Length: 338
Ligand code: COA
Image (cartoon, rainbow, N blue to C red; front, side):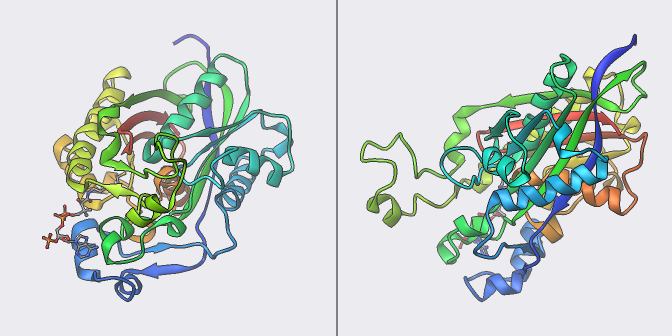
């Protein structure tokens, strides 16, 4: 490898709201049980925001923590990218609200709507801007509030038990590399298959409705709540996350054994166990957070990275593979030399 411009992760940050909601707490609100949830998903608790908190508030906490971790001043950031499916408002994007809360202005502020694959899409976009030399420092944030948008009743239990609130962020900086051993994002791989769009979606508000963006009929039908074909999502998640990891390894001519740590999107522990089993990854190499956070969608991977740095699991020099799958369907992977 000759000298090349790449991006590298120089800081990570994360934030979950203080309120913990256990499976037993949910069982008081709907017909479910700790036993059912743990057995089917591995989730034991999740965090929910208080009523006053918005997605950009969570993003702000994670962004500030990532800036401190990278020792980068907010004024030196060239671009903000926020991945979220739970934006503060229908428009403008959450990145604009975040930018004002951060007290910086005029740099581009971009929202990415790729759901559980959002962080990988956002990181890939940031990586392209850095590789071309256009930007030197990009702040990438995944932030989600699910709790305010779920059907908290027995009717919505299949979806509601899965999700939690939180945010994670990374600072990506331009770096000159000589070899693949230098810290850098080695490659990113993005995919989508829109034929699965309605297997996991939130129909309303939406411009596709002939009767308007959001109507009483939509609300009576529950179109404002996420709707999921759990089986289809499960089967495709296992298949596509496995393919994504294989893609990343093949592109970089490395083997599974070369990878030190895997960050999979955390939707269901059984999905991640099935991916690991399919590929032959030892369980101790998969960093799971689902038991304590549930599915935090675009926040999941950076939040996991933050925890892994804090507890000493993720160390400089490690080869890290990330894989995600989500609504769209969208999926993606990336290989990082930490
Ligand atoms: N508590 C108790 N019972 C529940 C329940 C809950 N929270 N949710 C569903 N059930 C019931 C169902 O009503 C069904 O009852 P029935 O047999 O009387 O009809 C039974 O449990 C089995 O439901 P089923 O949907 O077949 O369970 P499952 O084993 O497929 O698990 C999921 C359901 C949602 C956990 C599973 O499909 C899954 O994880 N899918 C992927 C979801 C995902 O990853 N989403 C995010 C992707 S980014």
